Length: 364
Image 1: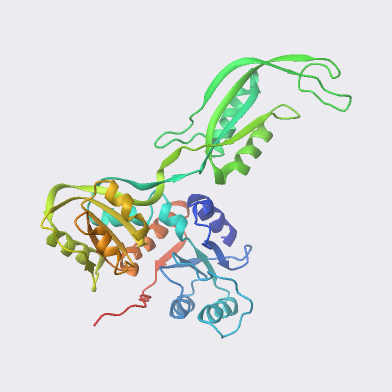
Image 2: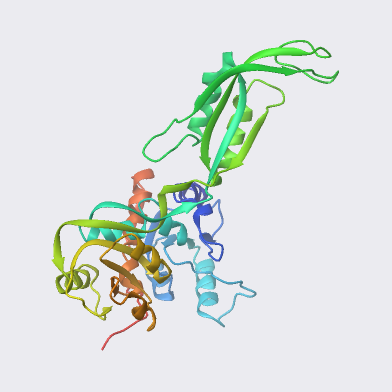
């Protein structure tokens, strides 16, 4: 298939608009029209991973961490990123990264951590904000079903576990077309009245262009009247981190051992033990210490994340068990998410996990 088929799918399945402002998710290297036959999934893009892709004849590498974070002014051998880009171009290997948008994705990195730890009743720890829009439009009654169907098919009307959500009120619209107008009904130059349905629905911000295009293409009017509003509502279906529960309490030491075993964390660090029990657990893959206050406010007994600084452990003292399981360790299962996503849409496309250990940290 063409590279742009895979990119378009991933761009929408794990919306690029969900990424943080500093991030660089999406296509890193590659020509959209190039043909791809197999993918190599990895956490990091290193030169060893590219060599592995070359040996396996994989023409695209899909990663969690982006290859390109900051601006590239030249492609040479001055930096590791430049060397990798040069090698990718030379061997026709594309690179696509799904980073912070995968962190906030409904079934993303933190939820995968919770599932690996066998937690139940999993929900988002810090829901997304200012990602929802409301669309209001006016449709002649005769065309309501057609337009509404087109809007739903374009992705509008999703609220949590429900789709095709909308609201209709009936009324009368008025319009007068000039000499150049081509009105759907009535006469130009005359004030006309039409029985219309006011239709309201919600959509994610990244779908705005697609939804508006569907509205205009399906609507019978020459000039389509519509309004779009930014909503303050939080979207609990996606966001940073997650929180879940065990059916029975376990000791702090047993919980730490479980984390170490599940994530194969060799150098696990944790705050002072209080002797309490662990039942409710908050998690955030990678560098998630900024969510510590949210984890405490959620009532969690423990918070598992990575890249915790010395003084952060004081902030957790007597409030929550803080566990640093390692950046690589807490995010390595992102490869499973990416593979499942691709195989769901393209079941016959060859996808394999990289066997290269990209963890830059070693333990004595």
